[in-house]
Length: 123
Image (tube, rainbow, N blue to C red; front, side, top):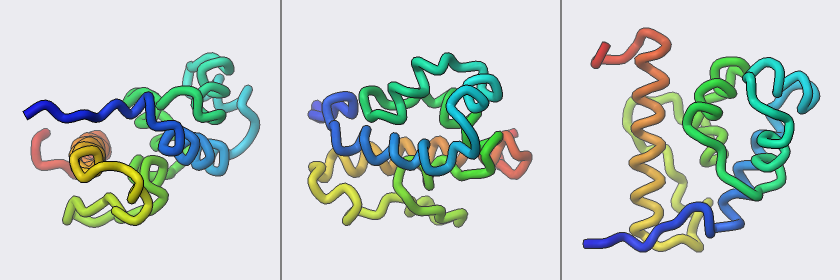
């Protein structure tokens, strides 16, 4: 079964994630750029909703800004081990396949975040 999901074509998702990055960046884009070793141009593209941030960016942002990846992606901070990180109402305009894919991505990022913090089971 081929899933018809292209997050780079979903402008509302990119804009929402960009708004959260802007909200939680703590300081200027220049300081964020220096802290994360990302160009200001890349960060402005993320904030403006032109592109989705990479997994690497999300992890660096999360660690340096003290914000969970699920909060950046979905606007909520579950911090729970139930993997239910996707508020389906937030992305109700997406298909159920797209919602499931985003939930899988969030779960994998949450597991990676937990391993990096030393709390994961697959160390």
